[in-house]
Image: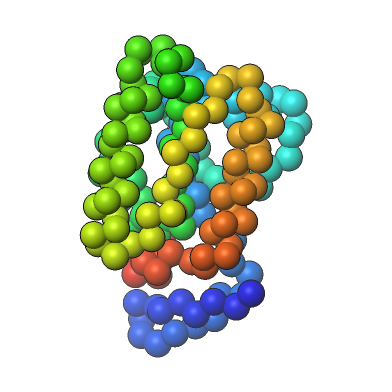
Length: 154
C-alpha cells in the first residue's frame, strides 16, 4: 500500500514500504516477562517494537505516551498484569483509568486514539504477547503512518 507523508521540508512524498514503529511500555512482572518468554521460546513476532520496561503499568506517566506519538511513533502498546494480579495491588487499575483519560485527550486533539493499545498479558502468555504485536502491526499498517511522523523529526 502507498501512503503520502507530508515532509517538514515542504511537499509530500510516498512511503511505499511502511513499517510501523511501536513503543511498548511493559510491566516488569507480567507483560515484560511474557515478552521475554516469547523470545526464549523462539516465538516469532515483528521487530517493529521498542520495549521500555516499567516496574508497574500504573507507574506510566501518560505524558510519555503523548511524547512518543508527538515525536512520530506510529503506535504505543501499554502492557500490564491482569486485573487483580498486580504485584503492587492496584497499579493496573490506575493504568486503565489513565489510558481512558489519555484516549479522550487524543480524541480532543483530533488524533486517532486507536494507535494506543492497553493489554493485560501475564508472564506465562508469551504467545499472546507475540499475537498482540502482530495484530498491532497489521492494524497500524492499515491506518498508515502517524501524521506527525515527518514533523516530529524521528
